[in-house]
Length: 162
Image 1 (tube, rainbow, N blue to C red):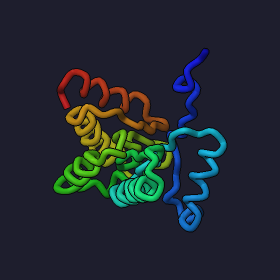
Image 2: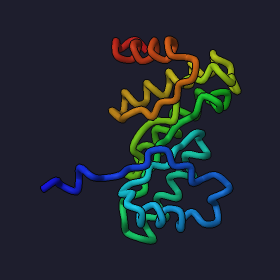
Image 3: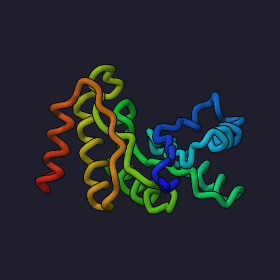
Image 4: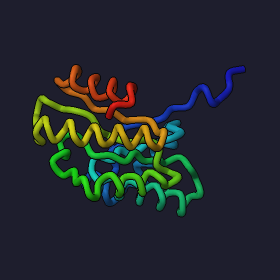
């Protein structure tokens, strides 16, 4: 017999903090569970958004006792211009200590839209990779038209030269 553990369905890119879901997010989660999704990972894309994701996860756990709603903590490349060297790293590190936080991200590089400059994106991404390495946590990556630059940062991390 095949273990049910091997048949898990995990949705790793859930955007429950979007205003379209705000009023009925619990119903959205329950419908996913009823459809066979065993875990949902809410995507943090900014400091505030990551806090909101963790809040929903904590609320779900407190209300249901179930550990099937998790969150990532990160600053998306579109929001890289908001990265603050004095605060962002520390804020993310604190959030990532939450037991329902499972990865750093969504972070990376997006040179297609450039809502933040490439320089801001690279800096915020580098800092988030450093944090993931420090905490030994996985990265939830985003890349669009920036493959070589993204790989360069990851290679620097692997070489210990960030």
